[in-house]
Length: 427
Image (cartoon, rainbow, N blue to C red; front, side, top):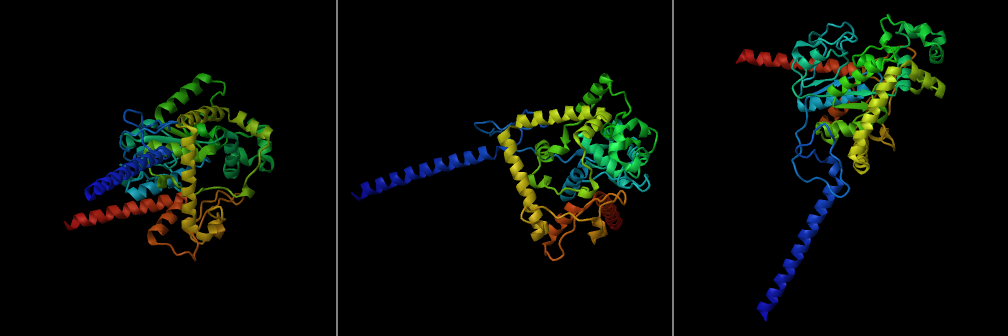
């Protein structure tokens, strides 16, 4: 009898174990399906194409691809490019990647590669001519840029809806561009009523006054807007170079695609919005004014329509469920970061409190101000918030403006090389 009870007991334990194992396997598979948006591309798929999230299951084969650390970001004007640049700068610092930095040949523009001149390797600081990441303003000379970029680099850029972009350019460069300065009361509405009367194609800052996006990407902003052959050839050229063209109006969606393209972690693409204007520095364009801005910048308008459609084709391939999951995760990570860095000042919405530059005590954290009539907002960490050293460093990097960050990276690179030379002299 004792042996029979023992046998029955063993049978019960075995059955329960099998059920638990099966349930555990089922739960693991379910979690994997829910998290399939973080899986890498399966073997044989073009890594530039995001992996779709199938409706019934996620692909289980293939190991996660290693992080892509070679990136060329063509930074365009007034398109949220400073925020993307900050993401790339922080990634480079965390992973010990060399960033290409301007070499001091461009006068006061020591954070740009002599823009608006065509890019040349000689504009790059000698200590950073073997970079992993390129992310500062430049106007492409593609052969020179490709000779600088590491093998296998992913080329990315960002665009913005042309009417909104033109309003930002008009505000930001209103005191710099002669095409804008001569407008009565410096009114964007007055400019858009007769743009040909004010536009000076030969002036120093003319690139901000018409088809700025096309110019930044290497094109001719004064090309006949009706020259379809030129525009189509230009678009094909861009498609042959760029793995991803981000869109400012769909910034988070663009970051989802960027993360998948580069096989990065969620934390690698967290951000706060940088180089934003105050509400008082903005103008609201009416429907007619916005349409006039699009017509005046017709080549930019055509570029935007094409690459916005291209972005959404990639997002549709990803699938609404997958996209929704990734957007939720990204926004949750951004809120966590805001709470970690700003504490109670982040508020119930976990939104970092932006400040006027004059309110920021640390000069290194004050963003560059284009004129007295435009206010560019920045951030400062709360003085009464005690952060662990590693987190404090991360938070400072997060809110450092472009000019200060570029200079700090160059100082860091110079100091590292000096230390290496000193050490070699001792050996």
